[in-house]
Image (cartoon, rainbow, N blue to C red; front, side, top):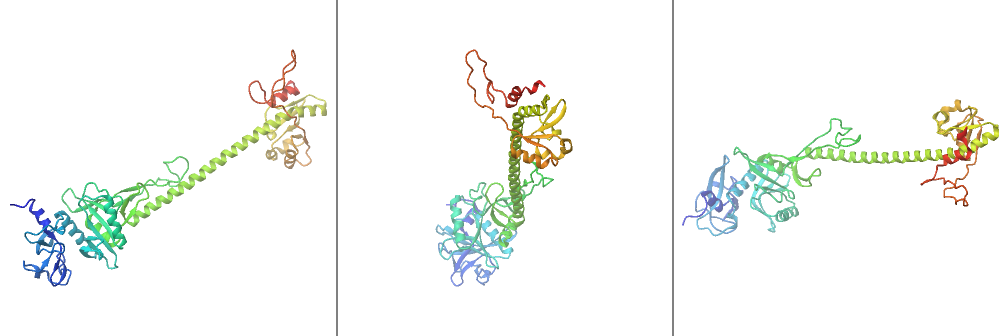
Length: 444
């Protein structure tokens, strides 16, 4: 009965690279000296005492070419039993061999089918660098769960062995959580390429770094770069892994996935992260400044409102005071005027007599114009502030502000005249209007 599968598949099912020689011990058919200092040609006959490490069946040395290189491997003799070592596909064997070749080209000593002393792991290709650093290069073409690959990665880490997983599957569920890459062959049939799992950072900055064009307000640019897949020839990537010039790294800009990157791209991401922190600090400062500005504005408006209330409450009292002092008709201004340090001017027969509640901080700029006028204040403290800024010896008068009712007064007896409430709400009038009505200032 003819065996099932193509010739290549049948060869793959019986192919191994490592066996056991009856006298030399472990041998690696891919090495010229078999990894034990012996001549490979000594095995090139069917009676060589070489057996499979898994099933114990006799192995034969075979020579073919692959990728322009001589490919030496061991093949199970006919009628071999079921063997786990020989169940790998031809594609798996060839990828494993490529990984070993590329690692050796980078200066690594590579052991195929390397096993841990305690049996915790078996690496397709274990690359050992001159400094003692060990990297397992795993050809994982069969479907596996992310949990399984993560568990095997942890076993390597516990043994002090770094690892990189290589797969050519369209979907690799463990690509984002383990140090892994996805492979594909170039459309023109060229060599294998790493098409996912390796990344480069593409920086992006506004033309004017101190001011970002993509955020509101005058804030510094935080960078608009990001990570993207980097396609790399497999031989270059394996060399970089062995030489430690590319490292697995969990990205901090964008999705938090594991990718192989080089140091320059790490630095570019770090620059953007630092700029983002600067932006956040600047935004906090800007928000605090706006809040202080709002608070200052609210305090200023509150001060203005209090000033207007004092001036309105004092206008009638000042009018009565000046009228009693001069015996002449008195008129007070309606609104604060900058020319009088935001106070209300008081006139007698059209001549300036005084100013009600001028703002102390504005008096120096108007000192000459205010010189000789009587300055009126509602409290002793206000009078002291005004006097400290007024001309030497200038008269400052403190007048008591009458208390105004803020609740409705009881109605007059039947037939009597009703009272108007001063304050807020329907039917109420302002303090200023009440004072003017009370003193009759508006009649002058």
